Length: 186
Image (cartoon, rainbow, N blue to C red; front, side, top):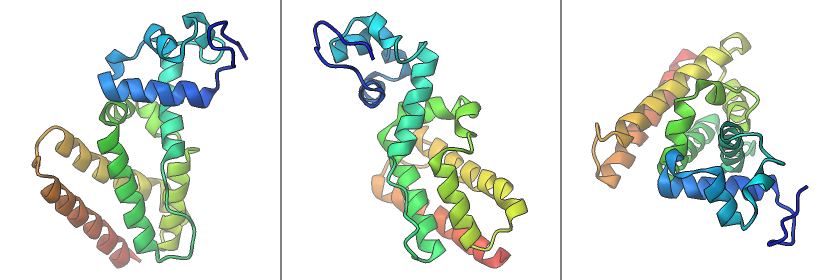
């Protein structure tokens, strides 16, 4: 690991990722640069390249890091309906907290379609509990993801409402429709 003369301690990928996410939250993807990130971390910009090879690699790191830090529902024996609701609410909250990141991810399908991400693994676990057959997991997961993402997209572009209470009610309605649909397809 590279050590900055100004900092005196090595950078970590977590520190790079979380600082970059904060900069994205403040100024969007266009507000994030390697130079600005280096200044925030109090390092020489070239030090970052010991950890990430480019801004694109940095953005992938931020996306994966943010997804890994999401508080996903544990496999605690709760009914699958409750776990699915918890997952949907976590995803929705995350999109609202990090709109620039969320928009970036959905403009780069190679990131969101990485099935190794913990988010997908939790969704597949819940879908198995709901009785979805193994051969249908990917398709069902894609449909649910598209449904929830479409709703968030409509919300973030002002197509639904800007009233937080109504947004929550609309999202709750959508999740209830998903749960009822899965219950009926069993």
